[in-house]
Structure formats: structure tokens, C-alpha cells
Amino acid sequence: MDEEEVDENLIGFLTLGYIDSHPNCLRTTGDHVAIVFAEFSIWSHFYELKLKNRRWEMGIWAYDGENSTQLCASFSEFISTYLSDPRVLIDCWG
Image (tube, rainbow, N blue to C red):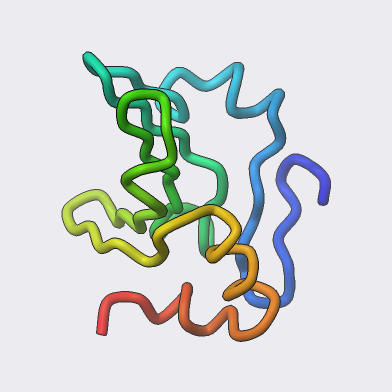
């Protein structure tokens, strides 16, 4: 996928260059790191990998600017869900 390209479900994965050049995509606070790596429908919500103590302890979360919900325990689970049933990731607020 190119930098601003989305798939047929309107999910767009961010390039490493985009993440690196946009400070809001990478946040660190104490022992927590959060990396935005994908977005849905022109940023109606985005997907963020949260790490604690430099490990993948916190999982994948969706945010819409006000609300958040944990979607998956790991990045590999997110990718498996994306490949098998992406609607789960899109309709995550139910």
C-alpha cells in the first residue's frame, strides 16, 4: 500500500516514513510507548499498538478521538483478524 492508499474496507496502513515524520503517530510516556500504525475511513478512527516496559503487553487499541477499545492482544492477532474478518476491526464500537 502506498502512503495514502486504503483497501476496499477503507483501512489504510501507515508507512514507516509517515509514522516517523508525524509526531502524533509515536508517543512515549515513562515506560509506555504507543504507535499509530493504521487508520479507518480518513481517520474516523485509528489503530494503535501499545507497549509497556518495551514489551508487547498492552495490545492493539482503536481510538476515535474520544473513545477507545482494545481490539486484540497482539499485532499478529490484529493481522489475522484483518485477513480473516476485517469488519470486526471496522465495527469495533458495538
